[in-house]
Amino acid sequence: MPYALRFGMLLGIVAFVGGIVSGYYIISAEPSSTALIIQSVLGIGICLLAGFGGFLAVRAYSKDIPVAIPFGQGAIIGLIVGLEIAVISSILSLVWKFVDPNFVQNMTEASINHTVAAMGSSADPDSMRDIMEQAGDPNSFSKWLMQFGIAGLLYGILNLISGIIGASVFGKKEETF
Amino acid sequence: MGNLSQSVGLSLRLYLLLLLLATLLFVWGLGGGLFGLDAHSTYHQFTHLFFSHACHQIPERSLVLNEVTMAFCSRCLGVYSSFAIGLVLGGILQRAKWLFKKRPVLASIVLSMVVIGIDVVGNAFGFWTNTHLSRILTGVWFGGSLSWLLAGELQTNFIRKD
Image (cartoon, rainbow over all chains, first blue to last red):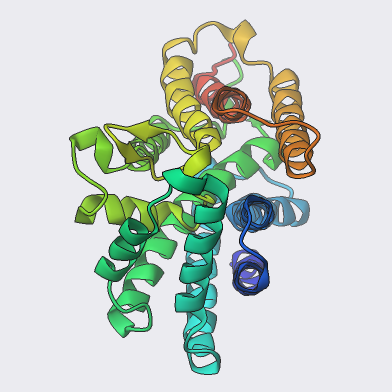
């Protein structure tokens, strides 16, 4: 499945780079609701792109083959794309832990500060920090493994669905015998 | 002997898988509050971690269920809920063929994405302030359109032309 692998690799890199850019932006920005909004727009854009990988892969595949693409095949292409996005982005994030070991903690603290700035007195930063601490050491391997598993599940599901949508839009529908 | 039209539509098995996944996504997104759990529970933290890859999870843009913030924002609530409900309705109504015209559904998907984009950008630049209701409605439009497209494909799977 060269299409699935190609799109999965590309979007995995995009998802990782987007996450890093978004993270450093929120770390460096002054605490405010505007910064949160900008980060959310960036995050949504990255996620939409990563979620539509299956759709894009099926579209590329449909251009090269003359026959109809079964929905099941679209689903499998999407699933492979999703899993590859999770693998690539997770491996790159693991490498980044050695480049900047404090990245996740700094980003978490910055997110809390921005949320407090946005919500004012109704925010409870201590409670937020408690929840983050309860989640464990962000640099631990077990935490990374859990993140990888969850990313695989989410991107796998989203791209499976978008692969089916791609087969619906681009797959030829009927062959009359 | 007539023509047997062999469609490559959505099989019942795949449709049921889609329905299961859509329901799971929706239930997980509601977070631990759905089951009366608090924000410190393992289940709630799992749902938050899960949707952290797909949603900004800004608390002021997310609804609260049983005093616990949902794992996704109000727009995502609209998307995932309408996607699941749309699949159910589409399966029930599949005999009403006039409901499943592809071009209007595709146009609806594209238009809903444009409206969401305008809503997000307009709010980000301060032209207006969107609300939970506006986010939910735009999300419902997008998710519902997607599910309608797929439900329409289920309908075409069993066409037989004699």
